[in-house]
Length: 453
Ligand SMILES: [Zn+2]
Image 1 (tube, rainbow, N blue to C red):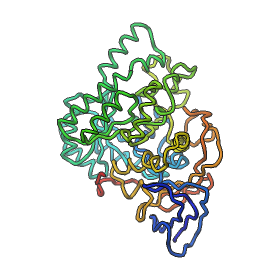
Image 2: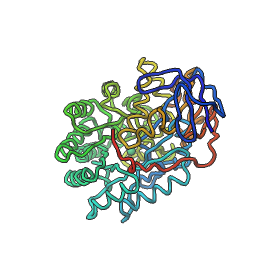
Image 3: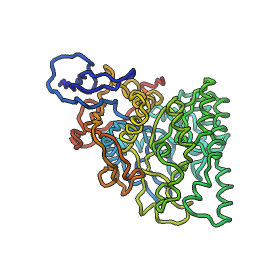
Image 4: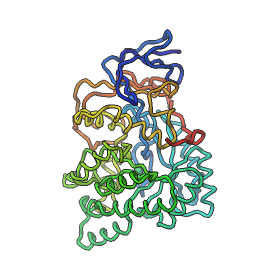
């Protein structure tokens, strides 16, 4: 079966070109010229992006007594509606489970029900006697990235533990991801705030200021220098961190970083809103000045990826406790990134190939999926988003598919909409409606092709 997409503006690595595109089976057969097609689809007037990759989501993630409200079924359906054809989620060991046991279980859980392709990162939350074997077992299972935390009780690694993980991961050819916020700094500020009786969402922001992120980023870079382990910083939120990471990259260090739409489009004013509790995420949303520095980081690719950290909780869950320390942190985002970022790009007049890099190509390259994913090229998976740039509309959570009753971007005006989505040559969405059948997503083994670009 050969399909010809006719008249679209293809967002290619070097720029946009109006060309037809041929799909055969699961892959892109050719661009610009091709054989007689069994099916023709008119996509004129639309951009054709490589399917977006969200390298940081948490479907059905347990946070204390709460569970993030999207499971793999609802979260990947929402992802597809947002033009995201690949998500990378996390496996967190529970109880005495080993890292690789948790990973195997999570892969099974995702593969049964997912609407888009799914890869998995393994979480290392304690030092293990069999760490090296566990890391190798995870790589065998298809997950070469190891997420670590410098904060959160039960997840946090000390510096010596993180050093050990980096040493072992480096030896195995993997990559370490880090949630960088300095735990001691947070604890001290939380104690201060408690003494003053501050329990509000604003106290959450005050307990995790930019210095807290900066100190952890510096410490991680110190450990990275000792081990030479490839490191990826998740959800960078502040100007100081961007500056430090940029300097390290310029010195040739193997470091990548992401930020998210919430940090690029919102500012700390959200913590003064009546519904401030909804916006509680970690790290918290920072100042306008930080926001400006993040955009500069995106522009010069210090922050090469835009990831959502999608981890929604319902209004009821978010509002259950008045004490900020008991509120589940996280917000929805996987479905809204592409329209929001397309709109932001248009307003800045930035080239769309840079948007494609930020929401797709860079993640594919860093996380071992390129060139199968992340690019419109002959032989790549036919993961495609047909984006119709015409018209303005307001984001409304009631129109979205995420299993949550609010959006941080409620009423935000966006330009255009996702019209069609293809996953490995299968139409998932046509004219804004689901046609993808039942759970077409597959697990992505990122190790048989473990090549970082
Ligand atoms: Zn996260």
